[in-house]
Image 1 (cartoon, rainbow, N blue to C red):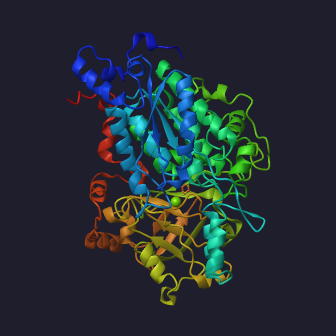
Image 2: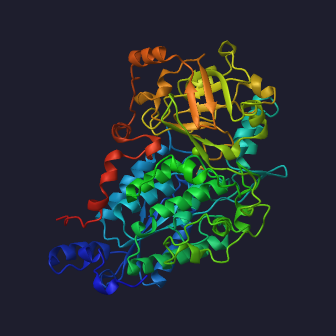
Length: 593
Ligand code: FES
Ligand code: MG
């Protein structure tokens, strides 16, 4: 990519060096030069690089970025840029109520305002915890100035009594042990805390590791960025190199729209299946695609990704954690193996300034126990199924986590392989589930399907990670860990539950789940990717006619704004009006005085 600097003013010069409006220029310069910067720096025709800092005391998964700032800034300075760090609205998955998902779009909005309204020529997007990565990519997509993602990295591996203790996974396992009466609350706490031994984000292939792998597969970070554990020296070096690289990207005018093309999203979908990635990736990538203006459809996840094999032996689909994945070569090793199998568009442009194929030259698995080759995978067909029927237009099922036991109990009836029919029990949100799941009157047995509704983007609000419902204690005591679960919310990317989730449209806006009743029979057919309530059509129509939308209570002004403008998970859960701003957000705003 050639250096186009000679033909172009930096956008920051419109603030700091505008001969048409010397009064305003002075006003911009005087305040920025009173502490951190000199007038010479501000007016020196050097690019100003924003660093969007997602880490803070309130955002511990990304707190490492507070310590990486020095290295990022050193890299920017080394390459001739001027670094300007700024804070991002915190999005802490394990801290924010009612759900961090509500704040993805708020952090996105505020990033758009910062990138559009301040003298910034390029930006380092610090990523980590689940929604921070999509929020940053969405904002950069809308404003489309040169941008590069820097992950904070996963925590070190957790250990409990000689076994790996993975983020999230240890919670689900310990909850079952607690329900069975095998451990007490103190041991429960100790087990769960053992999974978080250092700074960093979740060490499983949950949504954080997945979304950072997606950023790398899209080409939006340096090669190898996503998997380096937070405390490793390689993470400090990656911060420095990322700082250096963004300055060059500004000189090259290499923008997100040059990188995040349809081909890049197809690469990301393939990588997601190979790594056993999170069910949260489809809505997040859909949102990024819509903000950059690329056509993507929820069904693409099945058509492009379903037949990709599982190649990464990492929890929740496998056994290892982040350190093992990094040492086996991380995302470049997975993508290198996928290149050999012809599954990657190698000509996609990336943030390195080179095409993806050049970045991956020579990359392959360094430990086949952790990252397999394409032809000797952990399992075949590891992508998502995208189901439809009278209960929803689309819902996802992550097939890479279907256990042998689950397959045997539900999907292996001779002559009916891949399908089953069962009685539904319906819960109105997680509170109702917790109140009633152990109620014997519900008659939940080992063949029941559990439904949860009212937990989508509008309903919750934000869409909650609650679809991976545990069976009643009595069923767990029989050794059954999973019943089929279905809902219009999401589930944690660390969950090993083969739930049917992200059902769109959601129940509170009149999606099919709204009309289901406890006792109805429901049929799943993975061969035709369908799920239907077996209710006679005239009765189903009568239920639709009698339906009244539930009253929704907003607790903050943002919740009301969000609910008014948010779309469905199948469309990325975007603020619908925001998807129309690509062109205008990329123009220079008016002077402020
Ligand atoms: Fe933040 Fe998992 S909770 S990364
Ligand atoms: Mg979560």
